[in-house]
Image 1: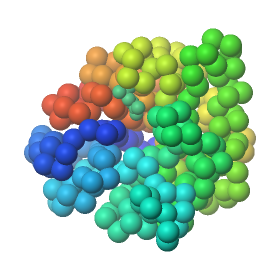
Image 2: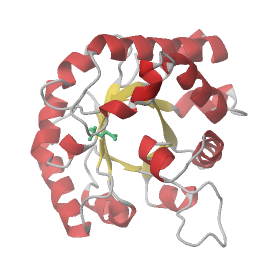
Image 3: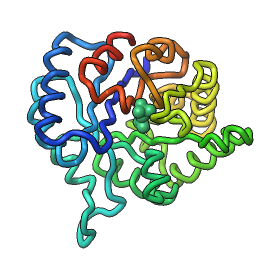
Image 4: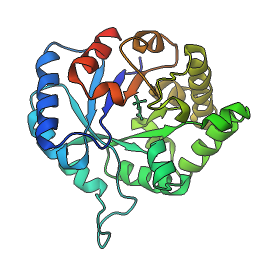
Length: 250
Ligand code: PGA
């Protein structure tokens, strides 16, 4: 059975003290055993303080980004090795905000994936189409290109710890969640893609998360879809109470 994962993506929100407060509240509220893996992705400055605050709990840590380079003279960058050092289990790679605001191409995303894999963390590869692409009925060819280019050069064994997040750009932060049939259609397509490229067993094992205006009112319906294995939650994850509510609905 595929594992279920729910990730809180805090984006550029919360100072260190706010992060510690939020994650401590989460830890207290989620003290029982959870059936899903709970992951928090705070901003870089809060990663290490959060690592300390969540110790002894089942909550795991994710970084929101990583450098495509290994180490050295890259002012302002944070390497995969540094993330591993503070116990990050997951790293978001290729979030649409990175792609559209910071010009991250599929080629850069591919290099970042390689870094994450080299340091034996799990990448969460984010993909998804714009409203324009969907309206032009090019969703699948667009996603195929993203996957093909981002996965270039990766071997079957590289994919054992891989997670994919489908996040249609038009659904992120807009309140316009994709319908459950739109979500299942794309998730099924993504699983098919992996089965064709890397074999049935691997395709069946890859967790595929949905992200885009997930809330406590739509989480459970989305999670019921056959090929949905978890959620990547932005806005609604900032308030620990709402985030716990989402987890309890799944
Ligand atoms: P949202 O963000 O839940 O605020 O739409 C999701 C994401 O960008 O990961």
